[in-house]
Figure 1 (tube, helix red, strand yellow):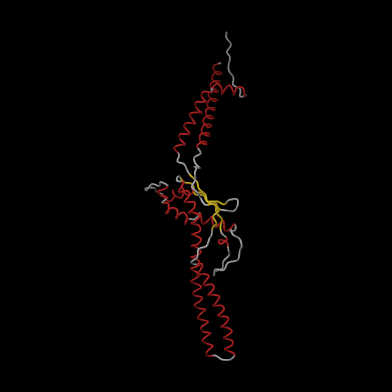
Figure 2 (cartoon, one colour):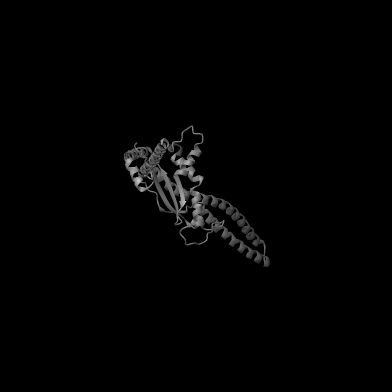
Length: 295
């Protein structure tokens, strides 16, 4: 009677080496197939290109100005942390997004179907995915734009930075226009007061005239102050100030940032090999278990 010899699998290094040697051909075929298939699939993925802008907020954002346009004297070129937060808020604002939607016709550019139920929501989701504005460790603001068109990615990044400057200047002009109206009204009232005192000097004499003359000098000084502030507000309502300092402008990307085909191929191949290893382990385990049952 022949003795039955039952194979037992032990999870030591020797058995593992034998395991991989026995199934070497399977691993080879699976690895090559997975690599070719994943490489082919990665070729079907549309590449994305990325361009970036680095900029700092100007101290004009954070300078403390009075209602009449007076600002505290500063020597700092860049704004503080508060100015950086304000700059990021403006860049991420709907004003900038609306400008990009219109300028680049993003509904068509992002292939939004005409019958899409929520087209604006879809566009916003894509903008959230492809447009990034963040603060760097150096206190600057970084704008990153990804797009399938490398030229558009570059142009959008630069436009976002430029649009932030435009928005700040528009806010300044609007505020200055309101100030200008208020100061103009104050100037007219003060001018009328001065004329009344001047007219009263003609009919008065003696001590009363001296008192009125002293008051007239004070009112004239105040009228001159209002006029100076009027001129400041007038300048603010029309001038353009720098609110950002661009360190690095966006340039057209030479290489894509997505997909990384080498990473896709390596990860896919390793995943297939690992899955195959588990399947073969289970298959051998089931085979050994059936041999035990027959005994």
